[in-house]
Image 1 (spheres, rainbow, N blue to C red):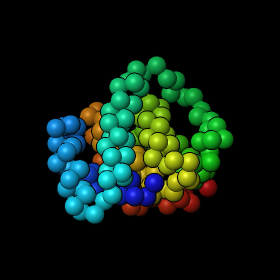
Image 2: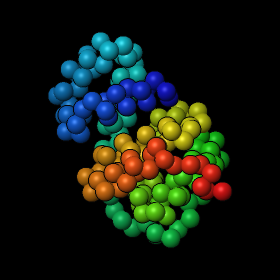
Image 3: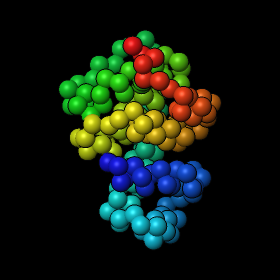
Length: 158
């Protein structure tokens, strides 16, 4: 997971959203990433992850979820998303930074990236930022989370 996340972070920090969405640029970006030292397989996985992010947003675009519903994590998800990360997701949802739909997108993209490995809070934060950044209507939530990202204390949830 770390290496694919490193590729995603590199793309996230160095390119604008429109550049990443342009499939015609993928060959150039792939070559550049490989020249920067990222393995070809991980670059391909990162582009697949980004492509799936766009598809996930389209699939979950209807707002028919119940805002006061409680999210229960099945054992498979709980093995990947520990209690501290679950608490952080809940906290962001209570603050209005994540909607139920964006929370589900984060969980979906996190599970796709983790490959069964447990994630940590920093990895979760980056995935949340990438999901919010991909959603044009969530710029305010993105900015708010970005400000919180470096000041969040996990003990706040206890």
